[in-house]
Length: 156
Image 1 (tube, one colour):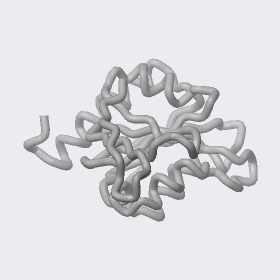
Image 2 (cartoon, helix red, strand yellow):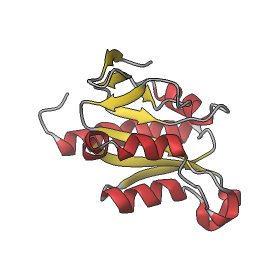
Image 3 (tube, rainbow, N blue to C red):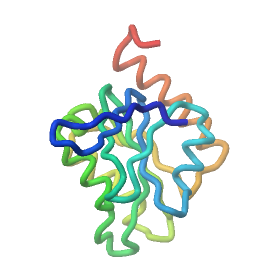
C-alpha cells in the first residue's frame, strides 16, 4: 500500500519520502487505515510512533485523518499529525483533507479536518463516520479522481 523510500536526512535521522497523492493517519485501532485500504489506491501512513522515521511528502496530496478528543474537541488533532504538518514542505503540499469521525460527538464530528482546513487554507473534501460505508468508499474514490483532474488537467 505504501510507496516510499527511506533516506537519511542531513541531520542523520531517518526520513521516509513518499510521492503518493493520499496520506493518512490511523491510530492503533486501524479504522482509518481500513478505510484507506478499501479505496484501493496507493497511500502513505503518517508514523504512529515518534521513534519511527519521519514521513516527508514530495508531491501534492490529500490528507485523511480521524478526529479525537471526544465531545469537547480538545486534542482533536493528534501530535503525530501536528508533527507531520509542522514540516513546512508537508504543509505546503497539502491540497485537501478528508475527515473521519463519530457522529456521537455532535459538533466535534470531523473537527480535526475542519481545523486543518482552516489553518492550512485547503478544502474539506469529504467526511465519513468510523470506517466508512461502501458508499463512502465509492464517493471518495470518485471524488479524488475528479479533484486531481481539477487541480492539474495533465495529471493521469
